[in-house]
Image (cartoon, rainbow, N blue to C red):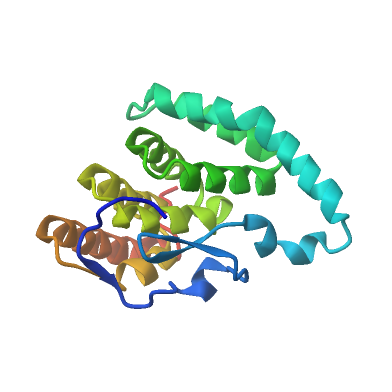
Length: 210
């Protein structure tokens, strides 16, 4: 589907940990041979069973048409600076307040349709890394894992850094399943695992330091 070379790494469970990702949907795209959730709506079917599917879809399409280019333009600004919220963060936070389900599905759509655009993918990974783990799941962790299949090391690093920033116990479940043959990436993953293990002992299921 996407013409990208991938690093030599192995995900022990090629379907990922579906319990961890809370994904019930079987409609999955394949990115560089790996499974990737393609439609967040179906993850949430139980919550919308009483809603007319056509109306829901039309509502989402309107939401997407109004906001997709706005998010992409913000990601392309690449105005990410340590200690400050980026333009894309402000926009996505606002959209989350409007409709978190639609927003996550839109981010998922942007990630898949722009997987060959390094700037957009990096921007998206940096942005979602600053959200609370429980708010951005399940699409956030899935994006971060899919980023490891990218040929560019900066994108791969952003994927791991997202897990590091979330500091959640579930991050360890994913990182411990990855065996990477690239020495620098393997070392970075091991460092993150060690940090998370130490901090989780102190702070619990998340590494939030109050």
